[in-house]
Length: 631
Image (cartoon, rainbow, N blue to C red; front, side, top):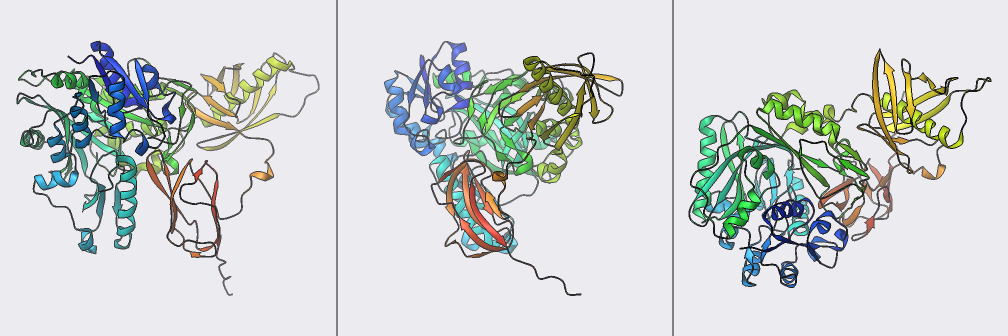
């Protein structure tokens, strides 16, 4: 029997495994990098061991250090989580060689399936030879052989870009997984991403726990997942389940695993088998009423699964809440998560709590919110409302995008679920939500009420000019004008049609068109104000001239590390609009910085290895002057 378990992972992943361990009475051990010293998974574990350093290659990808940590902490088993070393056969062997129980499939099964190239070879599917790719093969997908989560993946639509994308994907894969092997395969446009959850014991029993649809993705990373996959023809679904079971039996699989497919034109194309638990496993757990982590531990202890797969019930949907700005190229965000509060009735899987900091070193996912309902329509409605009611004070998140996605007709009807969803709909989905003007009024009156409470003051016989406050939000700037009234309240003069019913520093009630709405307001010292689901920034009355930047300045869109500068790039070079100049790595993803216009590079402050903060000046491109039209 397992008595003490080390989780060779971090954040939400480790916290998820710890939750089951607490239910089972198993003691827990965490490992942590210096960047994670105060992280939630460290606080929740019964014991924790430091892995010196911050980069994954120095810490969570060091299998030798993790085995040493397990032995030092007296653990008798290791759970790899998902990501990092979870599909590394050498790590699995090192764990078992040290006399520890490995919570995962046999190393031989990992080797057969964890590498996407070897898995395809096992099934008779050959990748493309990069040296022989032609225009007729395009588009193609460059893909990391190890790992997942969208890292090390690039779509190539122009043959001239293939070599650069191979290099970029390889570098990203090496950083994320410790393995820079990549391969090339045909890219199927706008297919559905459907997968089958497997659970196998060492006695020959294989459970195929239905399907999941994970088609809503950005940058090849899943955003919204659900079980079961809606609208699949019965014959196709049966074929997916059968193929997954045969793949597992072919390699003597034991434990939890997932077989992924791309479904297009009524056909299923094998993608890969993930020899680990998946991030989106909660939707399967909710539909089948099982705890997959508990079953993983039971299988590792030699237990037999019941011969019959559990029966499914209802529908479950999961949304991944990221610290990122979808309207700015999905740019990851960092900073203090000042408040994080999720309403009841929602399953929450997270590695953060109120007061934690979201840093630059790892994936920007804050949490997964999962709901279950008797029907798909009920689950969609329940999750959208839960996200609206979730209070998130801190960095910009994708919460509004998630709500809009769930309520979009294509998703709500499930009549066009495919990986092109965001390519088609992102502009509409990132339109600022309504109510920004009212939120700004509430922020202004709450601030005025707080000042009145601190300094006194109010209505005077001599009427003064209106007070003016301006707030920036996702929909642009909102100007508010108001004046105090004789009865201690406020008269709103702009925007028109708004009446102040009550105002306090933390709560304001406003009436518009005969309807009274209440707004909870929280203001922070840096000028950020959260009003309900709106995140506003108080604008200064006067602009500081020092904040102005020269035209053509390339500023860091996020904090990160400069990993590459274009070969031979130097000040004085001529560049063209859209030309890649340098690459930043932030939160396990590479972000390309391109020339904003054709012209001359007049300054270059970036160098490989340099860490930069958001807004740091990286380079300056002086746009070429266009000749005036002759009359």
